Amino acid sequence: MSSATATGGHLLGGRTADVRVERLTKRYTSGGDDVVAMADVTLHVASGEFVAVVGASGCGKSTLLRVLAGFERASGGVVEVGGAAVTAPGPDRGVVFQDYGLFPWLSVRENVAYGPARKGLPRAETRRIADEFIAAVGLERFAAKYPGQLSGGMQQRVAIARVLANDPSLLLMDEPFGALDALTRSGLQAELRRIHRETGTTVVFVTHSIEEAVYLADRVVVMAGGASHGVPGHVRAVVPVDLAERDVTSPGFNAVERRITALVHEPVGRG
Image 1 (cartoon, rainbow, N blue to C red):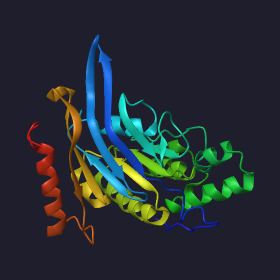
Image 2: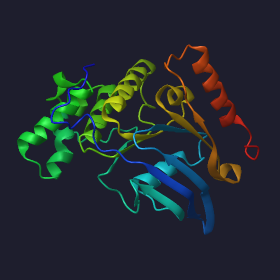
Image 3: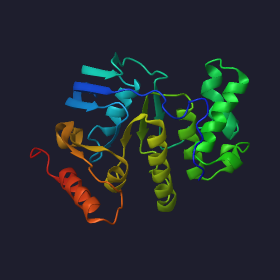
Image 4: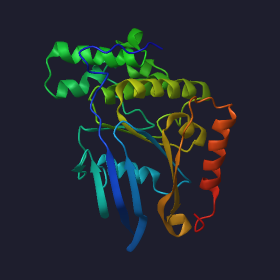
């Protein structure tokens, strides 16, 4: 994969923002009953930090991400990105899902250019930005191709490029590599680490893979509980990943992974 070339200062030193979540509560109404999905969730993410969120199914990982994105409203508490309250979706927050969400009738370049074009930027500037981020994910030779002509891994790289081309201050990723084969997934993990180093964008990344979380993140948030456990989803622990190298075979890496695994599997009510 090609390394990015920063032109016009767009890719390197882009926008970034901190995240502040204080005593977040999220309630749903189901069958006439009031269900508390999450309660008393507090999390601070520093500007430029990469934070991964792990936990058993139903603990509220994706709900937290959707609240940060503005797709769902918090029932209580404070949710701020860059000091501004989150009340709706906005261009300051880019979201990457597992299903890519590309426009099949647009080429790779047109998909990536879609956001800048919607902002009314000149055509030449829109193309420059699109080509810059296509290069960032190593797809220069495929810029004229359509999503249906690409592998799943390539499509996910286009999805990441498209979000980054909007210059978000916060990148939210919900299991983005979950549907990919192991080899493609590991390649994209390495690519995402490189892109994060170059852009400095704040990232909140939801995953079921503890190994993936330890490989990517500065800190790993472990969530527990959920409706199926009869306890609202909550933050059980936040584990720093103080590793100079991210070698998945190293004793240090395995020690952090084991610690997080134990926290994830600890019975609800003990953490």
